[in-house]
Image 1 (cartoon, rainbow, N blue to C red):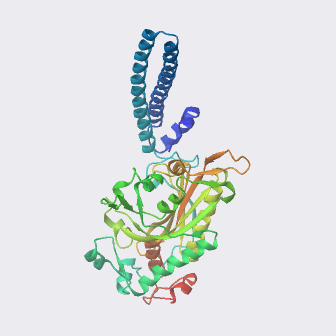
Image 2 (cartoon, rainbow, N blue to C red; image 1 turned 60 degrees about the horizontal axis):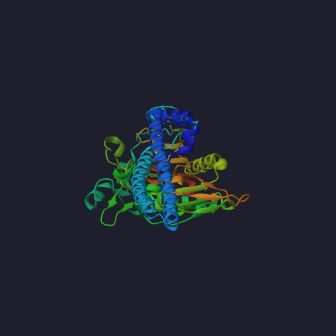
Length: 425
């Protein structure tokens, strides 16, 4: 959420950043400051009325003591008028505060200076490519055909039970899911992340705190009777562990990892992008979340990117890292790196992870702060970061497609064999 003092002191910085998101930066900043001017004016007039009311109340007592009842009664009338005016200015102040707040929460985070300008995924910057794209002496099959041949995943059975986008995993397919989850968790905890197991439903305050509400309510499954939302990612409940908290500077960085199922309506998705495991309504994902001091958060972001890269290298998957442009970034992000793995059977790149720094955008909504070690009175907003480490469906798709063999078998990467208990499918 944007900071009013920043907009007043450095409006040109906010305007340029919002323009990078292809938003009317100057118009938005001018509108916010205009509404805040009205709020400040209402506050001034309210303070004046309250001060005048206190002065008159004191005057009434003095007039009665001085034996001037008629003057005292007139002063009492003025006091009543002053109270009525105070009530009007209180209402005006409340309305102005609400107008400012509603506009602020509807504006996305301002991008980091390194974020490239652009409107579509085609404008994202490829900053690193790793691995050799697989080539075969045979026609590579897409993962949905491989999964059917080896009886790993049944997509049609999921349609019968629930609907499209809810596959059923069997045998080695189910074991592969479980193996990947454990592998990712073990790698994350070895890297210093503490494992947590959060709830799979969150309340409205939690959805607001991390920026899913009011931005993405149409993409979340909503249990209306209880006003709870099925989580789209573990980022939401894990980051909300710190809502309304003041943590000690000495405890930073705080690093958590969590496995959860994720639920997304994915409204508007269609075509080849939803075939097989490409886009699901329910899927498994392991997440990493970090709370850090502002001066260290971008180094922490780079460390998280390197950690995810090592996971993909261990799985022997070719990947590339993209720095997202302003038009393709998420609502809450200041800087996002996407990881894509190559899909040999589909001959296309599939996103498997986003690693983002939100700076103070989430912590401002969450009221997540930290207390300085050197100055105990100094309390400031922390930075929050998160990354997929990793999302399973497209990782599984790439593993099946890239490691398929001429004899029909699918080779399991060496690093994963201790977790699957088998070296091939």
